[in-house]
Length: 351
Image (cartoon, rainbow, N blue to C red; front, top):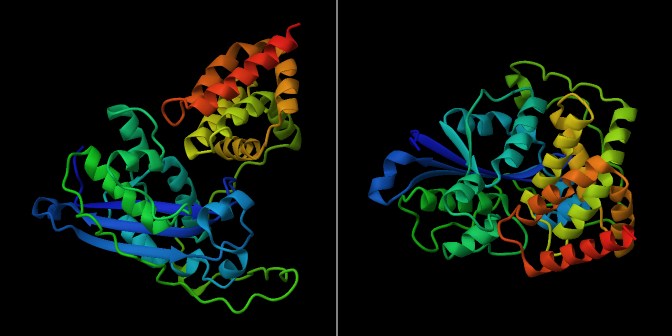
């Protein structure tokens, strides 16, 4: 690819996958590409933590590692939007691993801050890896191929932005930082929380006025279209049985982001089949809700019986099960066993 003067590597951690979820932390690594031949990378770094204004979903909190009590005492995103926006606007390309996820939440935060980003190309290192090499494409799996690993099981936004840079440079055959070059870089705006009170946490205070830096307002966000309860219910009903089986496979060896993307693709195809107009918010929110399903063997049996009686769902099932199995590259032994259990359920359902 043609390298721009500045590349910005980005990662966000969020309260969850729904459109109403918010960014908890943001990692930024801006690279001046003219410094690449020297081997001494010219970098500008950013690491921020925010009060998202809502509690994280349990799985999301497990991933990012920040307690609700700590987050309550941080700045809101719009307080730092002007400084962060400058890094985005002066960068020719924004890059991330599974970029569609980061792009969706970054753009939403700037919209809410009243400072929508001008259009910038987002480059996905996960998709680039799939096209050039193939195999398991989650960040942990790709890092293992280049002799790197996250420091912990929790996902740090700055660490993941740095790792996205490492993957990008490797895929492009460009010089990479020396071993151990990544700094231990805590959020620069981190505020210490007071001692945790006894008992249940008090209710959050609702913010009614924008923070001072929100005066960079360019335009009001376009309101999302209103989707009726009936359409939402119809879509959930039409996708749930297939989602149960997809999640049975995904949860067999731990859910990764590409498997959520597979759910979103299945929801989008179902929307087309049901003649529901394209709506990214409806599609992503439905996929987020379905990703919270924790199937039991009994639920697998019920889903198999339902799909046997639904010709359209049955016709596409094989495609979606293969899609989620290979969403992160090669299928694992755990996924093979999960598929065998689904096969047993269909054999019983057809008797």
